Amino acid sequence: MLVYLTYLVFFMGFIQRFILVPLAFGFPAYIAGLMGPWSRLQSRVPLHLLRLIAGVQVLVDGAIGPENRLVIMNHQSLMDIIIGIRASPGNLTLIPTRRRYAWGIPGISMFVRLARYPLISQTRKSIRADLAVLEEAAERCRRKEVSLLIFPEGHRTKDGTILPFMTRGLRIVLSRAPLPVYCIVADGMWQVRTLADTARRVAGSSVHVRIIGPFQPPAEESEIPEFLSLLRDRMIETLHDIRTGVSPRPARPLM
Image (cartoon, rainbow, N blue to C red; front, side):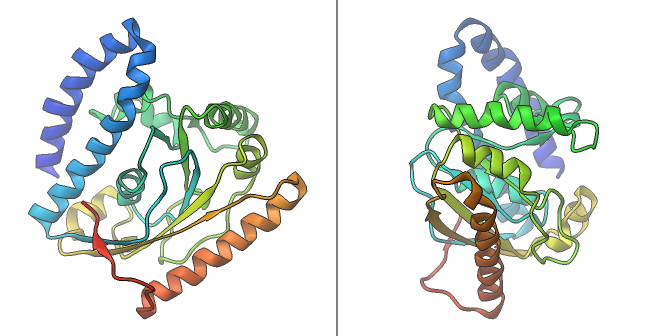
């Protein structure tokens, strides 16, 4: 954690503040193309640190294609974010992010603003604003500028199971940008769901990731809720297969 914090402040933060921010003001179209590779670099670094310093093993089975897509992932810990980004090739992958994370976190907050992540509050009063932000993100997906990674449970699970989906945002995205859908199912991280848990318990963890899809969304908007229900069922089945050792092919380290 100390090594990564040093990296966030003196490398990631420095590069963003003194190189990427000026580029964003002077050449906004150019910076948009840089953010995809930059985001994947920022996911590789903590994964390497976790592997080299903390002995964490992340094995992945399956892959996401290069096309624009919507990725749905179950939510067990803070590690989900870096795993989801690292597994997503191609252009920049946006993640709907709580608004408060856009300020005050070294390196991360400035990245969230540079990448123009959809910022949401997840409160009753903010529902309309949150949905409008997701509509804008869906339009960027439709124009093939970005892809989307969404954690539809909304919150990290406390026992590793897959919680019910919050489907309103997903319905908006799929109705405006009917992109192929990939599902990422990860297991082995729910014991380190918070930052404090990560600092105390992450060492020696073994994480298993399985990617399924692509699934083509229905043409009729009225069929989207059933489609999302079926996806959740498939993810639950996949989580069960991971835990019981059922695998269609050998897993490989996520580097």
